Amino acid sequence: MRTLLSPIFFLLFASFVNAQSPFFSSEKGYWVSTDLHIHTVFSDGNVWPTLRVEEARREGLDLIAMTEHLEYQPHAEDIPHPDRNRSFNIATEGLRETDKLQVINGSEITREMPPGHINAVFIKDANALLHSDSLSGIQQANKQGAFVFWNHPNWDAHRDDGIARLEPFHHYLIKNGLLHGIEVVNETTYSEEAFQIALTHNLTIIGTSDIHGLTDWAHHIAKGGHRPMTFVHVEERTPEAVKKALFDRKTVVWFNDMILGKEESVKKVLSENLFVVNPSYPKDKTILGFDLVNKSALPIQLEYIGSYSFHEHASVFTIPPYSNMKLKIKTKSNNTSIELPFRVLNAYVGPKKNLTLSLKTK
Image 1 (cartoon, rainbow, N blue to C red):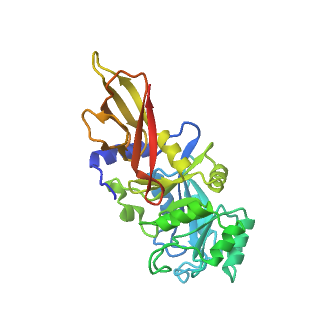
Image 2: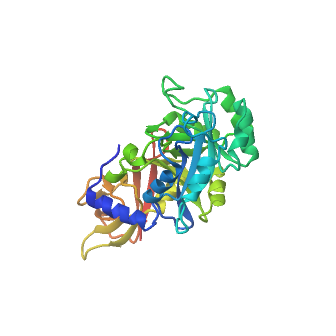
Image 3: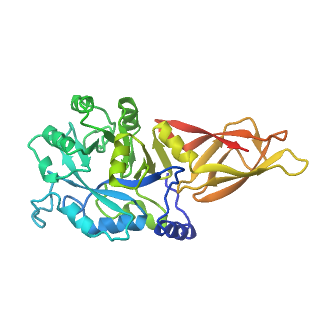
């Protein structure tokens, strides 16, 4: 689904990011860009922690979590580190005073299915999560006030059919408030089944890169691509606000040219970033002209589902990122205000369910 954008667009995009502007605007508060699942050489990744900071800085992210595997340590012979917080400590040393980027501590509790791999972020001490059984580690993470989510529930190393489904252990975790979210997107995969689990069990919808190598190699950053991100709606740009919003399930996931999440969150982010300006009728005509503005980094794919017809466009079109598109619609009479209902073809509020969004002209 990824669209490779032109070099000129990428230069504009890079300038936009370097200016520390948002990927998505908000009328009140902020849509904070996060990646809550990344790895370095302190578990099974291929880079030093400060490189993860540099990547995130260059890509314009607001917050990343260092989430090394607790139990799986393939580089331990070359990089022995009895302190499981070491990756986080090194990463924070790589921050600058001028950075908007924030780094939080996390860990990946790494077990066979069930429960599989579980991430805990906003932890205080990773060492305390090391236990002989996975439940004790998850319980300890919760005692530290961590936000806990299930990683890649559709991973074909654990699920031969690639289908995410709950085991009794997961039901126990959810029932007892020990599991708060689930990855619907991980690296290059999107799981409709995980999406439905999130909706059915009221879990926070998460999307992460789970990056082990270089983000540029994995996601073609230089050609206009991006890593999967979770956007969290907050009233202030602090780790405490992000943590609260994660528990409140105020997230949307950006994956390739697609955005997904619970309906209220997806509708909110698109309503704040897509709107009509400058509506007017030429003299003696009933063809309404207006500009449709996209303030976001997402190329928004729209299908008009109303009763009018467009004068110069088909009913399906895409408005590029950070752009205005001039449209004309034949209303048959001069109206002071009309509703423009759209189906957003790359916005999902459930498996195979697109968001419908109505814009108003005045």
